[in-house]
Image 1: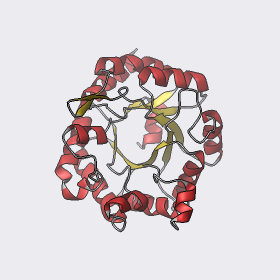
Image 2: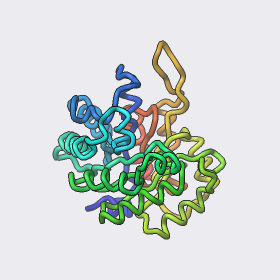
Image 3: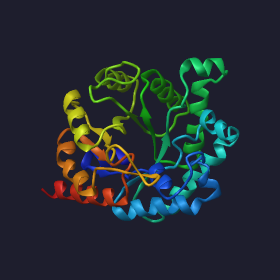
Image 4: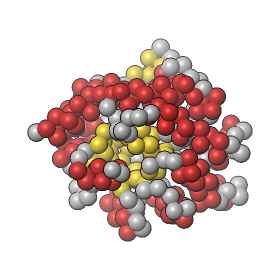
Length: 289
């Protein structure tokens, strides 16, 4: 069964954060985390396996910033295909014979439309290059995550349609008032994306579970969505960061999020395999009831 068919029957548990786990493990901020799929694949594979063991049925590739614009900051602008293919390979190895779906993660380019034009960067081509590498490597779906500019999301979605890519989830990082950073209201953005053929829409980052409940209640969607709340705001602690939302608190939010329309439910910044284990148990409990 494909993921869309599964989502019609039940709520599916996604995985949690990748970047914050790597940083907490001592990875320096200036390191290209996506390139680790090539140079230290075992480190990434272990995190995927921990999430699968916790109960995640959808695992995201470590490719959030694996587009040419972001990779160029590290001198890796010509390694888009290599990095993305390696990331899918690591995720597939981690999945093994487990019944999980591989989501190719695609983040925003990290530059404005004006900056892209000034630098001669074709944004659609940039997304198309990454998406093509992910799809050719065999992902089950594409997740556009943590977008805050509606116009950029439209460009990314069109790029996926042009390469006849995998089904996509268009996920925004949104303020608590339901307005994107670009000024577009979330309800409008979701409606326009669905008109453009987006397979599914969702929200991730910026909001902890209870803030996510309030945000979804505000927009009151009449369609299934994907929700990946954070574990709260990071607090600096001995050079690292801690998060306020415990696994128990994350699990406690599941019934409300599911009641508001969540069909794919995972975690974003600060979440760990412990959060996902608690969330997976809560989802099973909701299903049983």
